[in-house]
Image (cartoon, rainbow, N blue to C red):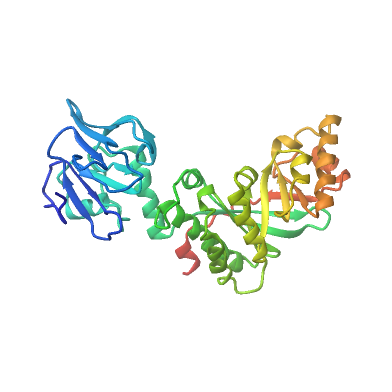
Length: 373
């Protein structure tokens, strides 16, 4: 039976988790093997959810430790955010079964270390724990970033090459955090990746004001899971942070924006609310532009392969001209990606494409806290 607490010196293998519809942390000891997790009443740990198979997964003891196995479940089993069929299970690992996250513990830890292994963010860095995996270390690092609000940004902009007027500014999270956040699961508003993305938006708004930027502010959507019913409210929240009336918008990858009708409907709501939408990494043809009806972005930023060597290849330049003509007919601005070669820039200007994306070097911010210092 699950208990509410576990002695800090206990070295027995166990799971700590929050049951469905409960905020009280539970602990269950793995006192038999295989330890079966599932919906069935006979399971060692029963989870009453239709998303959980009768015998969803199991933990077995091996000569070298413990092993997690998926038992051909319908919705799969994840370990530290990655789907697995069978994988070693070590102290501090996070097992996800449907809507339940189980933290596996099997070492004698101090009070601070036990706090870090719970499904809660830590406040102070701790010594490396026995059996810590790179994935878990990275997840703990994200929690540290969130709590210390130390999220580095670099800035880029979209400018009009004819006048050097800055139309849009956008803050981008620096590597490697950008890749980590983009791969994160943000279906729950309490997930670290989702909270970090919202934090980056808040930081971008404050820095935008502090830098005295001109034009509008673009908030980058780093992973498709952020495109849910909370999006418009999040934009309203960021808009309230701007001290002066600047236009606010989203910058989102073209493929993510057109992935499903639900995403397109959500972006339509964003536009109806008065926010802009800029689609990045556009690599499609004029047919995709002509098919746009309800969702018309303010701007399309072309992908680098689309404009590479167009000055030397007439057919590619002609294809780009058709895309530009289709966008012009819909009232959509077209921008060239950062790093476009000078001869390709000149060829694109001849087609009437004058907006260019610029990456600002040495523009990384230090932290959200620094903005308030």
